[in-house]
Amino acid sequence: MKRVNVAVGIIINDQQQVLLAKRHAHLHQGDKWEFPGGKVEVNETVSQALIRELKEEVNLTVNTTEPFMVISHDYPDKQVLLQIHLVKDFTGTASGVEGQKIEWVNKTNLTSFDFPEANIPILKRLLARV
Image (cartoon, rainbow, N blue to C red; front, side, top):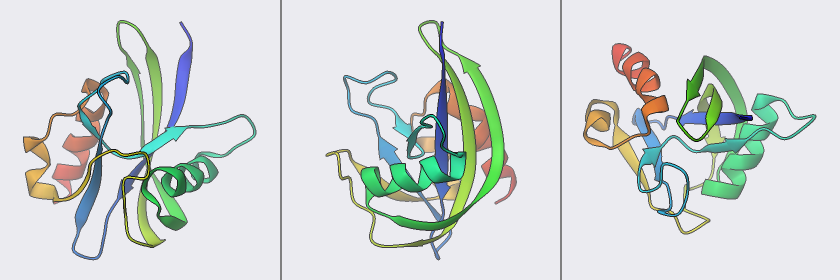
């Protein structure tokens, strides 16, 4: 089984809210909430991939990213390597470019959203920093 290399952005605005996106129903882990991002292409750094993906997915122009953590997770049907970066330096107004629902959420409310299993360690680490 091939491991999918994914750049994940924890986007935090000036009000200390985190941007979440809801996965389309037909996708792997569909109808669950996630931190935006996407696959890292060949010859791309995680930061480059994240900058590209966040422009394509949520229309944000990211200036810099900061490594946060790395998670390797095996689902029954897919293996993912999540390379998570914090994104605090960006411009633009977030929108669901691909028709996905997006929402700015206070960190303390994150636990009320349904996330893919692989995202649970991210939530734990983020909430430890509240």
